[in-house]
Length: 468
Image (cartoon, rainbow, N blue to C red; front, side, top):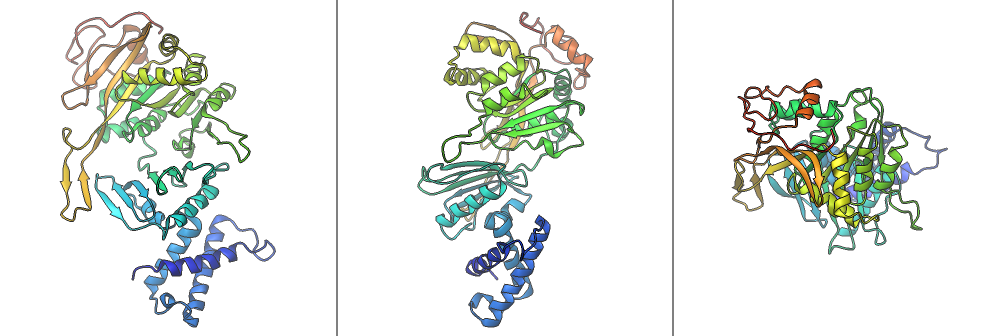
């Protein structure tokens, strides 16, 4: 039987009133107890409606039908309503809602399907998102015509982004993070890079190199950043800074026992109380952090981030949107010149050269690229794209020369765009990485900086100069 959403709405309203009873009638209950209380009240209201035959949909419900109604009501009260079933599906990767009845779901294997409506109207969808913002955000998160955009982390770690008023219909995008508690070696098994790159990245983290993970949207930047953070020794104190919680490194206390996760805050109704990512990066310098990790650099916080990296917070990391590893420098410069300080490109490049050690670029094979394939379905309502995320380039930052950042692309995109060895590391960098566990001969032989060996590194010395 298809669930009658009118019945669900009727019972939800009744149970919501029960839950809103004064404390003397309904003692303060924990989350699990409140959910169980709601479940019992749902059954009671079902029995009442069925006996009175006051709603046709309540008559003649079988046990399985009743359980469906109970689940939908609980999802409406404690979850994301009709979206909750999609959130609970481990195969789902992305959910895009373009109005209440235009819902697209992308699965981990690349299949994209149009799903059932998630609300009876756009107004109901907006009310649902407002309820979600009130229940799940750390601080006040409005969603109305005065503040028509919303970003927050859902209880399962998914990222929700919503818009209203500035679009014809309300829009909701949910990005699920299926791979959360991962190590660098786990990404080797998943095919993101080989063991040689894994050894390099592990050593770079342990030797406290500052790393920027660059890539396009949905390319796997956050997944790689989490894996890099897994290599941080547990004794170190970490501060993570995000526009909206997403990294969830604090969810692994055994791996990171001393961690503070902080989130930016929008202004209140009076336009006061805003705390930006840039503010939080500056605050992190006073929090005795061994490492500062910024989930995503999107604007003016790039300058405090670079300053943090160059002022004794070695080993810090962040992600940034870029179209190539070299493009990350241009992106940083564009953010810096738009920031309040209006930093010119020459000064920005000095900061880059004095703070960033490695840029790791993450790419993704999509339709028409390499091993990606499109599989049209006969009904026209779905398609499959076989996609793979992988590291395609790694740059070691050497120095700056006016408007140019001098760097070695130690791994460059190969014929299939996956990273292959290119320029050698500088001798001093290589020596330090080897001291921290780098095994440059793990794949295809061994090498020494500046000399080609079985490992396939090119002949020639690396570009010198710059800071260690």
